[in-house]
Image (cartoon, rainbow, N blue to C red; front, side):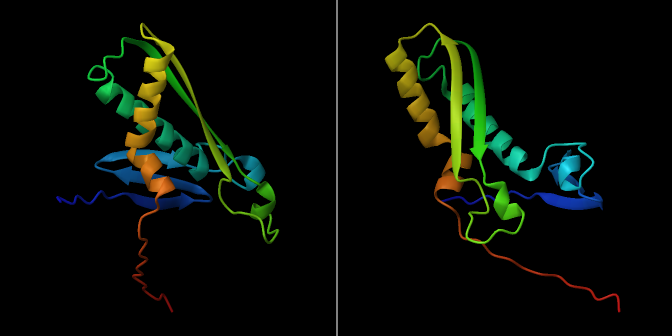
Length: 148
C-alpha cells in the first residue's frame, strides 16, 4: 500500500481570523460577529461541510462517464445539525455535528434508479465521508518555545 501524506497549515492572523494553506493555496476562516469574529470568511464547521460536499462532487465528476451517467448539471447541498448550547458551555451536549444531511440536485438523461445507484457509489467512494464515518487514528505533537 502506497501511503501519501497531505499537509495543511493554519496560522492566526489576529482575532479569530485564520489563514489555511496547502500546496501553495490559501483560504481564510473566521467566525460570525455574533461569535466574536469579523465575519470575513466561513467558520471551521462550514468549511468542513464544504469539504464534504466538494469531495462528493469531485467523486461524481471523476466517475460519471465511467458510470454511464449523462450528467447535465449537479449541485450538492450539505447541512449540519449542531446544538449551539454546547458551545456556550452546557455539559452533556455533543460538541460537533449530531447529523449531516446531503441533498443532491441532479439533471441527467438517466433513470431514477441509475441516478440512485450513482449517488450510492458517490457516498461509498468519497474519502472525506469515509474519514468522518471511520475516523482515523489521531496523534498530537507539540513544539513549545517559552517566551519567559
